Structure formats: C-alpha cells, structure tokens
Image (cartoon, rainbow, N blue to C red):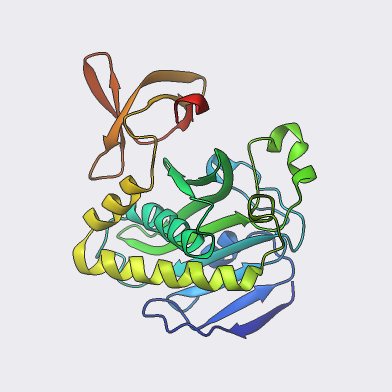
Length: 260
C-alpha cells in the first residue's frame, strides 16, 4: 500500500494543501477512520479493493478511471450539524462539474447522488466516528466516474451509471477535476461555518429538479409513492402522501424519467 504526497495549487481554508495519493488501497474512507490525521487531510486512490457506498454497497471502478477520494475532519465538528456534510459535498461536486462542463448540467438526487442525463456519475458516503461523549471524526468519501468507456456501463448492475468521458465525449484530466471539487468543497464549508445549513440547503434545492415531482421512496423491502415536496431543515425528505406529508431520513429515490 504505497503512497506519495502531491502538492495542490489551490489556497484552501479548511483543507490541507496536499493530497496523499495511493495507487491502491482498500478504502480511502476506512483509511481515515482508522488512522490519525491532520484536519482537512485528503486521501486519493487510483483503485479501491473494498470501495463502498451507502448500505455497504460495493463501489466498482477499474484502476485509474475514477476519482476515488476522501477528506477527513477532526476539528470544529460541533459548529455545523453532521448531516450537512453530505449536502455541501453534493453541492460542491455539482458546482465544480458545472464550471468545467457548461453543457452537461449535473443535478442532485436525494440524499447523496449526482446525475447527468438521468444517470449516476457520482456518489457520496459520509461516515463518522465518535467516543462516548462527542463526535471526533467526519470523513467525506466521494466516488466520481471519470474515464470509463460506454461499454463499461453495459453490465446489468451498472446500466444506470455513466462517466464524464461518456457524457463529454473525451478523456478527462482527473487531477484538474479533483482540484476544482476540493476548492468548491472548501468554499461551501466556509459558507456553512459562517451562516449555517440554510444557504447550503438552498443551493441543493436549486440543483435538484425532482422537487415537486412524483417519486417512489424505497427502504429495504418497503416502498412508498408520493410527491417530493421539499427537504426539511435537518435534511430529511418531505413526501406528500395523499393529504399528509411525512419525513424520511433514509431510502432510495426512484422516479419516472419521462416526467423530468
């Protein structure tokens, strides 16, 4: 598990100005959860042998084709609510991609996905570690499909995935994209620390086209269909079912693509 330190050109406020780059690692999230680190440490891997998403789902990616990275925080964790890290990370990825690819129009899907043309290009996994008294680590894991070819997504389990190369039509510079995402993440962290969750949630709403649409929320073996009304101040999905509105904190959203 060899690694090298690489400098970054951006001037960050909350992140380190370098990355720890692994050719291969089990999981960048697990690495940070299991080791001591400086606040704002960035770990990037070309390949993860045990990459994962929400609900212990496996994150598949051939070596060198994706951006697979995590950022660890262990300071000032009581200043913003834990749930907002997922939302500000999704906003940051969306903003960075929009700045690079003006025609692709990335959109956000609750709670942690970024889509382009109705297909998933990025997922986010935020994990925490706490002792008996307080939260002492927050780790943001981001997996972004960058240079996979269209043939890669013809597997049944990947049919709803895509990559930036497929969508933009050409090979992409992963480190340039990484730097743009990290700068956007740093800016949104600053916004959250200064003004709280509301500005982040408002950005997220503007980047989510599924609000006021009919959706189905799936959690385990259960599913419920209704109108996606909004996200609550604590990040919960508000779903109108008949005359009542209910809050959901977990689940997978599916929708009729023809209605978008």
